[in-house]
Length: 66
Image 1 (cartoon, rainbow, N blue to C red):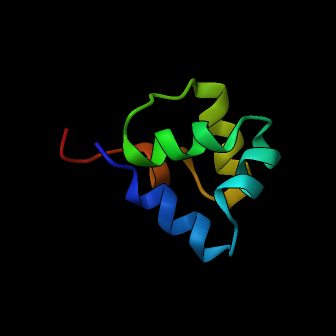
Image 2 (cartoon, rainbow, N blue to C red; image 1 turned 45 degrees about the vertical axis):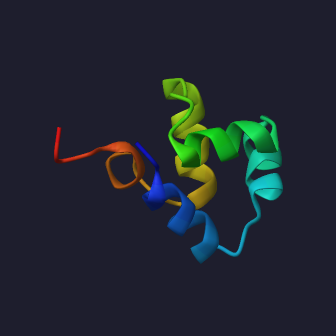
């Protein structure tokens, strides 16, 4: 499942995938894969992404449909 919430939050902070990746100590490809739904990040990476984007885990990674 695509993570459009993460992509929107990243865009809202005017960050490129490369910039977010650098903030989280991962590659741009990892950020891209998470946004596409091709990669399930670890909880530590989820927390790093949330901190970088000033969002909570629920806001970015919780799907109320499941």
